Image 1 (cartoon, helix red, strand yellow):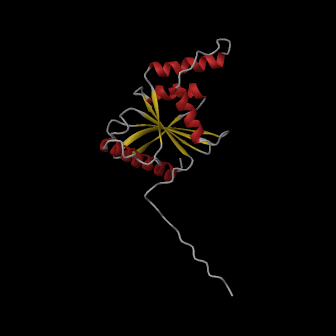
Image 2: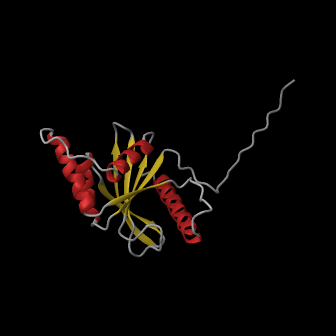
Image 3: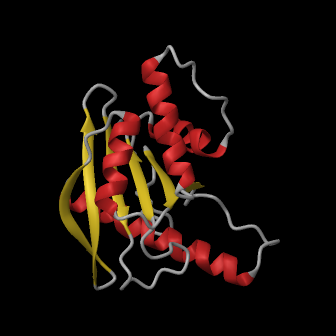
Amino acid sequence: MKKKTTLTLDLDDSMPDFDDYAFLLFGSTTPSYVFVDDLNRLYGLQLNRAADMELQQSLWPMFTYRDTLTRLNYYLIERPAASTSAAWPAGHKMLVLRGEVAEETADAIHNEFSTARPPADPTDLLAAEHYAQLENFLAAFTITRRIDPTAEATADISRKAQKEQADLTSLLTDIVDYIDMNRI
C-alpha cells in the first residue's frame, strides 16, 4: 500500500527574503563618484558604475562589484533628490552586500566608522593609509547606520519612526527584487 504524502507550499509575501543580504546606510552627500573612489581605496574594492535602477519613478545611481574571493556582491546605491523616501535622505548612499559573509562584512565596516580607534603605527604603511582614509571619511561627517529590514518595529518608537521604518523596508524590498530580477 502506497502512503500518500501531501506537501503544502506556503507563499508568504508579507516578508521578502533578505537571506544573505546586509544593508549599511552612509550618511554622506559627497558626490557618488568621489564617495565610491574613496570607498574603493579604503576597502580595496572595485565598485564600478552600473546602469541606474528605476525605482519610484526615479533613476537611482548604482555601482557594483563582485569579490570572487569572498563570493560577496557589493551594490552602492545613491538616493536621488526626486525620490520620496523620508527614511533615506537624498544624496545618502546605501551599501547593499549579498553573500554568505554579508552580515559580518557590513558589521566590520559599520564598526570601523562608529568606533574610535587609536592612530595606526606609522611604520605600517598600509594601516597608516587606511587610517588616514577613514579619518577623511569621518572628517566629511560620514556616518553609518546598519539597517535590519527583518527587525520588528518596537512599540516604544513614534508613529513617524514606525512609518519611516516600514517605508525603508518596502524600499529595500524593491531594491532586492530589482537586483534579483535583473540578475545583477
